[in-house]
Amino acid sequence: MIRIEKLTLNIGAGKNPDLLKKGAKLLKAITGVEPVKTVTKKRIPTWGLRPGLPIGCMLTLRKAKARNVLGRLLDARSGKLAQSQFDQHGNVSFGVHEYIDIPGVKYDPEIGIIGLQACVTLERPGFRIRRRRIKCKRIPPSHRITKDDAVKFMEKEFNVSVGEEQ
Image (cartoon, rainbow, N blue to C red):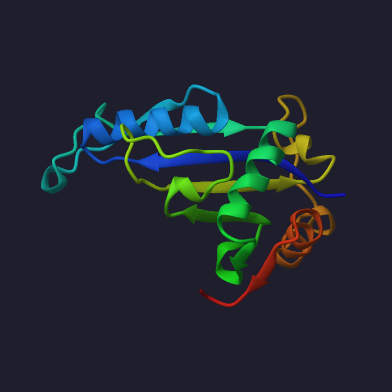
């Protein structure tokens, strides 16, 4: 039995502080949860980045809230995903180009038109053994989630059609 471990939403703003504020406001409007700012860890002089500079915002949703928001995000993509959006470990990543495509979200002139990225992490019961503190163990190959398992889960649970590149 495969289930959703978490849904991570991300908006990259670069060095633009106005876009960062708009992105944080958008994530709060979509989910009702306050996002956290992501900061740089390395110095990249050619890009004008230094450690500690906020360059984006993100948040993580779990359980029922993640399932509800994921359904709305997939509706914004017309229920279509490409094979390349699934990795070999059963994770799914996709983007929404314009937030106004998401059902239940209205256009806000203060935000403008921006998009966001979503990453879905799937798990099976028993995956906690890799995160626990005492007797941490690896997940055996027979219990891991493959790309085909993730595709079947998304098709069954969310009526998503998985095809070639779009």
